[in-house]
Image (cartoon, rainbow, N blue to C red; front, side, top):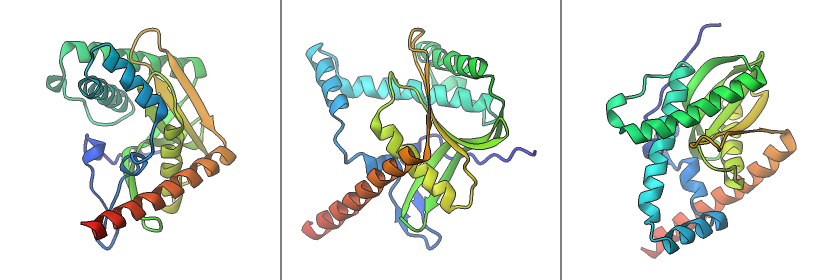
Length: 226
C-alpha cells in the first residue's frame, strides 16, 4: 500500500485549527487544560520543595518529549528531525524513549505500516481540532496510536486519545484499534502499551465532550464579562 504522509507543524500547541467555513476552533490539549490535574499539582509542589523551578523543568522535559516524537516519527516515515535544534543531553535522553519504542516493537512483534504521521483533524460537528501522532496499519488493522513520553499514563491521556478517535471517525477514517503507547525518557522507565476497548473510549469521550462544553461556556462567560 502506498504510504501517504500528512505532516503538521512541529509544535502542536501552536497549531491553528479551523472549520471548513474558516471558524477558528480550540485544540484538544487546550480544551483539556481547564481540567485540574491533582497528580500534576502534587508533582509541581514536590519540585518546589526541592528548590526546582517547575516551569523550567516542564519546558525541558517537553522539549525532550518533542524530540523523542520527532525521532520515532522519522523512523515511521515522517520528516527528518533537526539535529541542530537540540543539545547533546536532550538528544541522549530522547534516544532512551526511542529505544523503549524499539523494545515495544520487538517484544510485540508488531508490523507497522504508516498511513499518516502528525495528522491534523477538525471536528466540524463538535468544533474542535487535534493532531493524531500516528495512524496506519498494525498487523493488518487500522490503528490510532498516541505516543506519550511520560513516566506514566494518566486519565487525561485517555480523554485526549478519545477525542482523536472521534475526529478520525467523523472524518471517515476507519479505526479498528486505539492504543496509548508510553515510552520512557530514562533507561529504567521502559514502556507501557495500553490498548483501549470501545467501552473505555466511549466513557473517555463523554468526559471530553463535557469538558468541551465547559470550555465553551467559560469562553463565552469571559467574553461577556470583558
